[in-house]
Length: 621
Image (cartoon, rainbow, N blue to C red):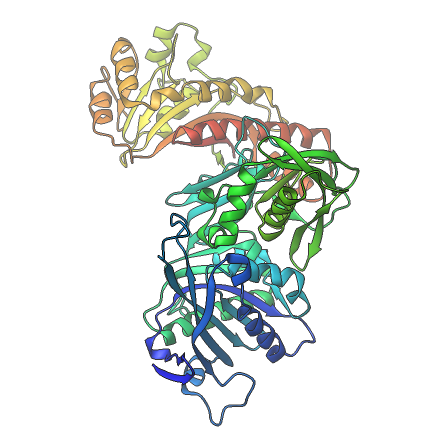
């Protein structure tokens, strides 16, 4: 590096290895992209030392082409990466450690890289950690006339369709002691863990997902994270600066492709609540909460301003004093359990979402304390606001839980030809001993016979009788353990209609006996109840359960577990007819019964998934 002015050093692009973490912005229509770039560049240079109590100065810079001027010739870096403008600078921040008294002359010094990259009307910005939150505030207040964030749905569709490895969710319904205000989860494929009923009470704040493998993606590979409210994307350290620019270019490519085909844009997590843009139905604020920084993605929790604000607000009095007919409300504030004043707060629309506009309502009793709390609310976005209307403000967005019943996802329509679907057990026998002896004998047309023939590979046992675990248990050749619950249809007539009651008892049994997925409990129970019970290995009847138990003993925690409900009362023809009626919003009594049935099964599904298994319901083809 060389000195270019005073002690200002010239950055060389070849010496930079930045971490890919950028806010992606879009130039407002009718605004010259170069003007947008200049506005962003000026904002990044804003000295924040008066607010952070740090000594701050810019110590190195680089521009390609020179800022505000036309380059003398084509810049090779821009030509190779397809960018129009690139600039960077390094900010030095010096501050005294929090533990050091006034007499100790110890200082912490950090160096943060700031970057701006433009291609056409898209801009990628990498502010330093200390300025990221202030930069987002600038977008909402002053920068909105020049730039706007990428729409959350575009980001969700473009970057979050792969296997989800991390999810940060905010509550989108009223507060309750039985449900957390926010949830953070990590796993293998988290979209499969989401429950339409339970997780429908949450909206997506951030996610980290595997990027799809596509021919056009070379630099952009691996697991990408996105915080939707701030239009933020983060990936990994780049092997050099040119590679960083290529990755940014691929981000731009994906966003432009999605915006060019809006009909193709779909949600990555349809189970979650969706944000609203209309405040007309939002009313009756009744509670607020403060986000825990440990539960937020690092892109939202970084920066001294946010950390100071969080510490203050988490120890403050924050009590809704008056929730009006609309979205605005009054909030009593204070410290140490004492009210210091009252704020008037209202959500104010921004280009993509809302921000809380707060100010004093009357003269505060303790002005200095009230001002500190007001500044903390104003300088961070850590408050969640809960409304009687069922809406929740959080992270710059207002969401409401989905009101419709989510479709049950695991219907499986099977061929029951040759089976009397209303007959559960052989010949309608009542004696447990006779039932086990007569399964699949000549003349048996029961559902028990159908089960014995359908699962004719692997190890199958019947446990029908007093205190049964399930009607059948099966271990497949792939190691899948199944608890199979059987219930006869209320009628075998082809035109039978929807019945919730036909599924109530069997769904309750399926949820009640989940404790038997504990292998030790299951083996103990099966060993104690073997005499006279029917068993098969690869479709051949065998005596006793020794083979099944021996196979069960070698199963591991990673082997798949399923709960199967065999209840053929619902037919595929009726199902398709009701799905079509739902699309046409033709709300008949039959459709209402069907929704009640799917709600029942979704609740059962929730309990089964929490036990580490999958619920499948076999109905009639």
